[in-house]
Image (cartoon, rainbow, N blue to C red):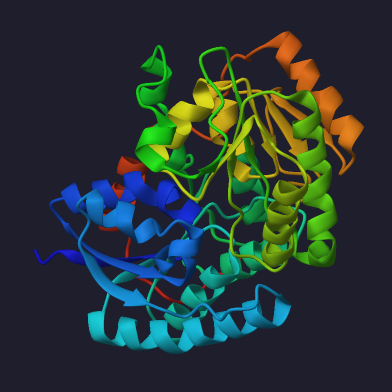
Length: 385
């Protein structure tokens, strides 16, 4: 029997950790052939150049698609999606995959879904059915309607996909593949690497032995004009607390220039003697860093998913993760300095939480690979009403 060709498209820094265990399972599966396509901001150094980690991990790359239009505004996001459709269509035509796999809800994933759908290539969607507070909400559910197979991360998400009219025969709660990377992290007793030595970065180098915070805050697309003001509230809160902090650069979303400018301007005005900044980090290292931290501050989905599994305290700021299913580890606050400070101090007092299996138990990659090998190939839709 010839191997099924599975084209997996990675378009951004977080997407790689979301799907790494799936890539490994496909690569190891006797009946599957991995066709890895790296595109958009995953190729750009200013956002951490995820492609370097992909190549280091030994995954052969079948194609690279440079389609990010500079500007970090709504027009640039729309045009980047359009360019992605043009470029990915050519790649799919050349590779002739049996199934295309797309991840989550970023605007670049829309290009993957549209290209595959119009080319009659079966489309598998990871992490459908969840809710969020910005354009990702529209993109995620639009891709659900374009996709032929749904590998969701929770029972709540599965129920929502079924409510959207998808056939239960092609909707599977596989858990989130990012949880697969978090399982071995729970066995680590202490941080096994020096983040300053291994990843460089810029800023102060506060001692980490007595505890530290991790900050990851992205712009919100429907509030992109406020991104600088929003990041400044977090900067003031962290600066006031004087706790050693490791801060990660934002995603390439509309408003990212406001977030970045806000950080740079703040650094010019305040010494930030307890804060160090990184662009990116290998997925496993980042999760280990998170696990041994005092908590995560910001609005990243890692606070909702992996942090729930690891029991890491999270201060979730603003609307980016609005209505997303979360564990007891999350405190939600607005973009207000004192509220952010109070939430951080509350977590510092209470410590870590018991881990939750809302988003899986750590075997998602293997489950998804097996399904990709066994499911009947189809690109027509049977909608259940």
